[in-house]
Image 1 (cartoon, rainbow, N blue to C red):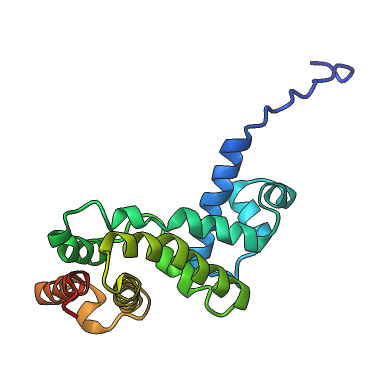
Image 2: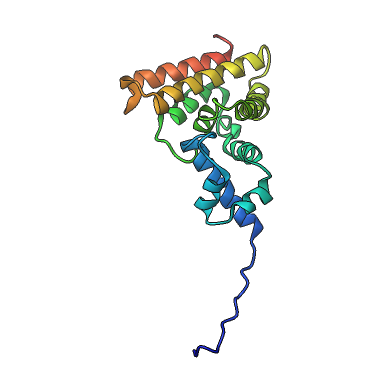
Length: 192
C-alpha cells in the first residue's frame, strides 16, 4: 500500500442485545465485588470495552443499571424446584457448597451504605424472592415465614462469605449444614 492509498473503515455492526448483556454481566460482577458506591458507569464500560455513553444509553443511570443487575442476579426459582420436604436440605446444600456465578447477596450487602441502592434492594427482594417464596410456602403466615428463610440464608451467607468466622470459613462441618437444613425446613413446615 502506498502513502496515497487509504483504507476505508469498515463500520462495525451493532449487536445491541449482546452489548446490553455484556454490560449487565460486567455490572453484576462489579456490584458483587466492589459494591455500589465504589462502582461507576465508567468502570463498567471499561470492563466491557465500550464508551460509558452506551451504558447510559441502554440503562439510563447507575441506579437503573443496579436494579437491572440485581433483578437478573436474583432467582427465586433456584430455591423452589424441590419437593416441600426436601427444601431445607436443598437450600442448605446450595448455601454451603462452592461459590459459583454472581453472588446476589454480595450485591445487596455491598449496597447497604447507599440509601437509593438499599431501597432498590429491599423492593426487589420483596417483589422477586419473598413473593415467590411466600406463594410457594402458603398459609398461614407465608410472608413472615418467607422473611425468616431470607433472614437465615442472608445471615449465613454474610458469615460464610463476607465475615468468615473460623468454624465456617473454609469447610463446613456436616453438623452445621444439618442445623441449617433443619432450621430452614422447620420454617417452611411452620414449626419455627
